[in-house]
Amino acid sequence: MSLDVGLSLPGEKAARPRSWTVSPLHAVVAVFMVAIMMRGALPFNVDVSWWLILCERMLDGQRLYVDILETNPPMAGSVYMLGVLLARATGMRPEVMTNGLIFLLIAASLALAWRVLRFSTFRERAGGAAAVWAAAVLTILPMYDFGQREHLALVMMMPALAVYILRANRERVAPWAIVVAGLCAATTMNFKPYFVFGVGFCILTAAAHARDWRVLFAPENWIAAALVVIHALCIVTFYPEYYTLIYPLVRDVYLLLKAPLLLILLTSATTLWLLAIMVVLALQSRRRTVDAAALVMMAGSLGFAVSFFVQGKGWGYHAYPMVALGLMAAGWAVTADGNEQAGLRRLRIGAMLVTALIFANACLWFNASVDNRRVQEEITLLGPRPKILMLSAAAVIGHPMVREVGGTWVSRQEALWVREIVRRALRDGSIDQATADRLSGYVARERAGLIEDFKKQPPDVVVIDNQDSDWGAWAAGDPELSALLKPYVLVRNINGIEILRRADHGRS
Image (cartoon, rainbow, N blue to C red):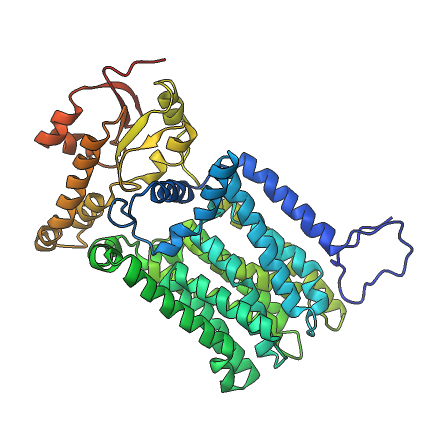
């Protein structure tokens, strides 16, 4: 009895009789089943939870960038709109529907990538262990960051990546694949401008490996460029406030939120990414020819690494594409055909073990989240469907907690980050007092929006974050805010997070 999912080393094709086999397709399905079960055990992502609220508000008539403050382009939130629409139509929770649609998207993306490579020299590896490995990287590896923009951007890029691999290997690309690749590459870049590095590095590497400059001007690249321009024009037409209100705010305030480069270089994500690249290079050094697929995937990984470093936050989900593509390249290199000399066999076995360890450690990294269950449990005791307002820059306190308790988010933004970024930048010496004074208009606008939201929809519960900031003292020193907070009584202080309820909103 044997289990054959295409994981055998080259030269080890079994001649022994088998009573049953497991095809790569069955193995991929098994990976999806494990990932689906994990969704029930892992907490829902903070940002994805907020974007569900954003979509619900837009469907209820609120205007993005006017009634709702969000720093990302419309693509970031609109991709969740279908999940919310279907959830309303079927009565399912938007979270469940959204996760289901993401799994369908991953399956479709992998199927398209496999279809692109089906008639190429890579067909056996694309349909074997590499396919199973890619499924694990896209469904299991994201962990807590499942559904984030970086996750979805990489999922969308897979068919385009397959086309770039064919270009690098000077193989024919079907017309339908050209159209799909252009659409997928454009969608990836429309999530965030930074993702142009991931797509661009793949194209440049494909052209260099093929030694054909015409690859730079392949039709899928023109399609992608045209769609990116059209997307930008649509934002100008339908969401002009993104450029007039949000872009200056991001430029002047949000970009101040950066970690030191040395600190980002020392993160576990950077180490794991470098180890994955080293695995690929070690295996490639023993081959007579360069593997085009591994090379293109490494280039994409490097491009997303540039995106990670340029964004300068060091957050886990920002690192997902670079680590994921690095692991895909390592898995692909491990399955490469080659001369089965004893030394190469030992190297490949060692590479398998190292790649598996990188994957396990990366899962731990991407599963990092803040446990605020005590806050959620306390708010649950205050009554059903509470209206909640939060004084904090830490979005993880309010989300997905507000949805889990069936509450209503009062504020127009995910968290009050403008004042906090300016305060910390001044404290850390990133800006001087003159700059802080120049940015005070943004802080005042955020405060005015907070007070307007408070008055428009008086909350039943107010959460004040005094863990690493001074929101309580700030509110107490503001005459208008302190007057609005007078009807509220302190219920519980959980490690510096104060939970207040309106005096006439008792326990149920």
